[in-house]
Image 1: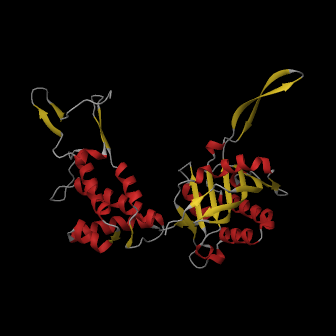
Image 2 (image 1 turned 90 degrees about the horizontal axis):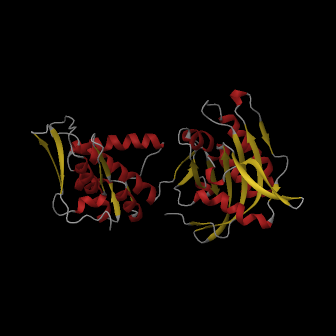
Image 3 (image 1 turned 60 degrees about the horizontal axis):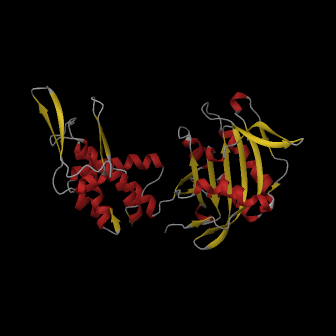
Length: 362
């Protein structure tokens, strides 16, 4: 079941701060000596900054191979939720964990903010959350002030709220399952460090997650098969719009059904033992990357099927400086509107485009 989260009444009330250096470069870890109490007047603006990046993110949960009791981040979160007065001690423990995990040369030092959030709404009920934000860069900004009856311009450096590099929101929901965790990493390159090494989380395999993964796998597999000849060799000249058509056809099953069944998908879509075996191999690789196995049946999220359809457009880039953008709706045309061929006189390939009206200036 999907988790519905709202931040309308949420408030950041207390903070623990840290400067996290890089241990391999002999940069120190500096942590708060006391909890910073957020003034009530500052709470709305600060809370909005802290929680803005966590809207519309997929859920994760803490995971340990033997027991959640041995999961350090899970234990810290549990202690804070059970006794918020311990935010300073456990917040510093979280900062120390991040510091000890920051050994890779690509990991940057930065400022860490750990805040206690009250009144987060989850499925209609209010609960608490812990927000962890890391900023790895500072930006210059200008401020104008009044002094001796005149205006003066000052330059300072600070954190840009729009460019906070990494974040995690631990929500006090389903504690026995490892809590509900939202996370992001804008850097991308070392997200494995943030998600697996530091947080130790795995995705929540709910309906939106499974719909996303299986539609992605179905589309990728269909495109891959479209580029292979019947006898099994690569077909480099397969038109990109044909792979777009194949991707749309792969999503037809998800549009028509309310419930996904792997057995039914194999029988109705893949059909042949060879295709079933290849899809199983493709799925196994994705599961290995995610670090967990996916369910064989689940409720299909129609919202995420629509999102998948919007992602399957393609762009044909030609060496003459021309690009043809093929949108997903291309596949719904009753007759073919693109043809390709070879002009003997010019010694060049061509693409013929059929259309009823030029709507570029419409």
